[in-house]
Length: 84
Image 1 (spheres, rainbow, N blue to C red):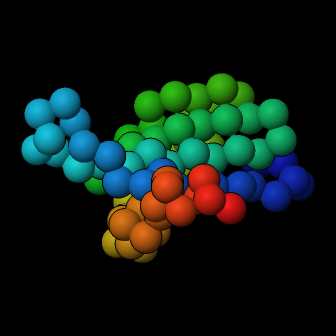
Image 2 (image 1 turned 90 degrees about the vertical axis):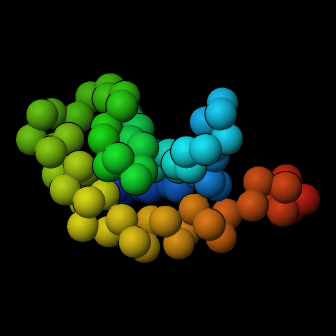
């Protein structure tokens, strides 16, 4: 990964079309590189610019920090963010 600072964002909790499965998106940016993952599956679903090794590291990060990522997603409120 580059010398730039990696940025990560976590979406609010989403539900699938049936309303049964909950998930959140985790995005990683590093300069012009972009990757998007989904929790609780901890899978990278989109990648633009990260190497396979870097993607493996992002996957590992999501698995190792799943509990904390879920907490962040639960605290995120899209309507509160729009008020700011």
